[in-house]
Image (cartoon, rainbow, N blue to C red):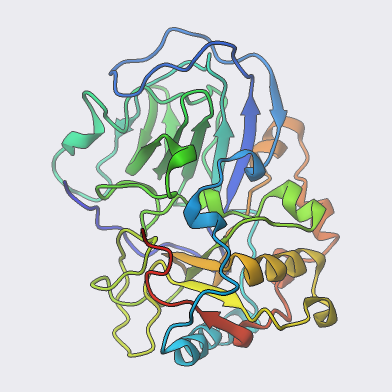
Length: 354
């Protein structure tokens, strides 16, 4: 099965983020995956805002890394990452909640299912066989009629169906008069029991990881508590020939000895007194989560960037983006100011791999 060649993401102090909108919970079981054609059922009638905390938490995203062994080259790799932060955009990592994000929808069992058309934006010249037919990743997807993909060229869109225990992520998703299309994507079946990544070259990230599972949620930011690892995108990723679990693939090109492979786990030194750093409350929540669960490198970007939940779907529905209140006047690009990137530690390669 082909593994897609994915271009460098067009992020400028930006980050892949994710948003969650709940559409009515149906009472019946969801349709099984892998049947071509659109369901005739209506969109769920009710809708209410929710967050990434409603997504399933999988092993790769909830493992406690506080006592995990460190990689032999930890100090050099941390110095590499620190330089990637300090050499860009005023030396502050991105926390972009306004664009280049992933709109995520949590759907009910009665949600109408549609096929997604393959947009050959990468010039493959053929339609990959795993997209359609029995078990096809682009068939019978429960996308709400009013869904919107993320703003920005990546146009990422995630759909989570608790009733069928499935998660879809699409890259460059868009809706036209003829329906939905995407350049690439994939589906995880039995996602609540999965490790949180796509197989066989599928998925919307360069790592094959489901980045929505590592996004900082709106409710989490409000509460000041994040109970999972955090997805991180960086400019320079280690060469694609080397990856670290849970990543499944890479588009990296850095061949330096201190290169950071896709999938690398980094934790903030557990001895750091986060409260004494006087960070923005959201950054402090990120710091505390990174001490227990760590960061996971999931993609390349134009800046070191923390993945968050976008408020755009909520704004489209209510007219108000909740991040304005959460950030309390702090620009998105300044949220991570003062974060001690030089105090990170790199966890041993492939730690946690079954």
